[in-house]
Image 1 (cartoon, helix red, strand yellow):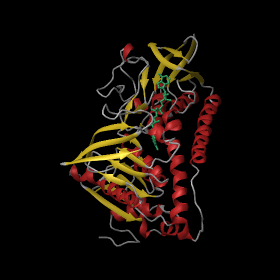
Image 2 (cartoon, rainbow, N blue to C red; image 1 turned 90 degrees about the vertical axis):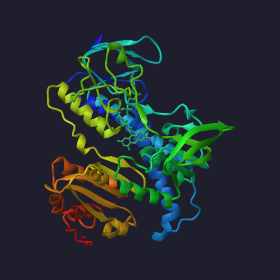
Image 3 (cartoon, rainbow, N blue to C red; image 1 turned 30 degrees about the horizontal axis):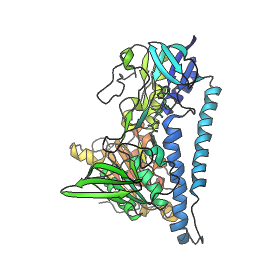
Image 4 (tube, rainbow, N blue to C red; image 1 turned 30 degrees about the vertical axis):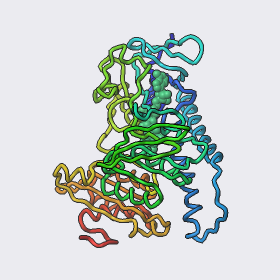
Length: 468
Ligand SMILES: Cc1cc2nc3c(=O)[nH]c(=O)nc-3n(C[C@H](O)[C@H](O)[C@H](O)COP(=O)(O)OP(=O)(O)OC[C@H]3O[C@@H](n4cnc5c(N)ncnc54)[C@H](O)[C@@H]3O)c2cc1C
């Protein structure tokens, strides 16, 4: 039986990053993946393919609707969906191949097959064919991620009622697409197909979209997406989706109103559930919580010695960067170092156009909790670079502690919000104040000057707008 210091089950961003860090720290490491490709949900059917399609569809929308404004004359702009999907697949292949290369570079042993923990320290790997292979290690990390959730009244059928996985590879643009759930995945996939010509309707149970993000920004995003052609029904509870002759009909209630929607495809994007099926955790006594997530302590230890868990399979936001940081911290603690994840500064991003990004306390949360905060805002309509680039929709908002001036929340709607967010996260990680950020030199002309100005606005000293 081959022996390792550490076996990681699952090669998503949590698992493969943990493997690299473990190898760097000198641990003899193995990674077990049931799928053919490494990289997990994120690289194969999540973050990366969705962003590839978001970029391509954004170029298409620009060519169709915006180019003329810039004096660019494009005639007969058309769509070759096959090529667009192939490009997405190529991006995925490049990155999953890159992860395989990184495993080799770091001398991490890769096993293909379903990994099952048969006893503490023992993992059996069952490939598609042949006998299972047994491997052992003192430490095992479960990084088996998550899968899309459906409901008994709207079960995935892989064709008409689908999850994000199928919505990443529709071979035709659906004439009508119904999106159930107005969170990140629903809004991103809805944007893709709306830009490519689908009539997209989003049904959301809550009275708002983008739960978890600053309410003012979420409402602003909904307005922009509506102007782009997407339709929204908020406070709408879908009771059932039926499929007949290849078409779907959804029935829903909105207050006292009964509504029906017909569609060619229905994307159910109501959330994801932790996935630990087949890993054998329960059989060896690993405790799960009421949502079937693996229970861990702050050191990512389960209740069974030598077994750890990270990423989507444990509690917390289901995000690739959260999984990565947990992987690194978990391995560092296994190696006797002091790993750490700062859960107060995990940014969330919705990659629509404009993008919505947020980290920390929102203004609405601060109000609800009666926190003593100051808020500073700055619109991209007053930012030279955004105007020059014709992407001046949106604004930056900071929430700072009124007594200490420390930034406790940063929220951005902008074409480049995801990248601008990095600076906000770094300042918050180091406990920076609005004044610190406001006094930091930002190159001109850049979108990032709006970040500086919003920080100045916290203390009513923004330069390029009035301070009230
Ligand atoms: C459409 C979509 C878009 C997304 N976009 C973003 C985004 O922009 N940014 C972001 O941060 N997050 C995004 N996410 C979420 C992100 O993909 C996940 O949070 C992330 O992949 C979680 O990483 P993980 O390592 O915990 O698990 P996963 O990436 O789910 O990887 C788990 C791996 O474990 C394997 N596995 C499971 N059981 C076994 C077993 N018994 N044996 C062997 N292998 C096993 C699985 O095959 C899988 O490869 C998106 C998700 C989707 C679906």
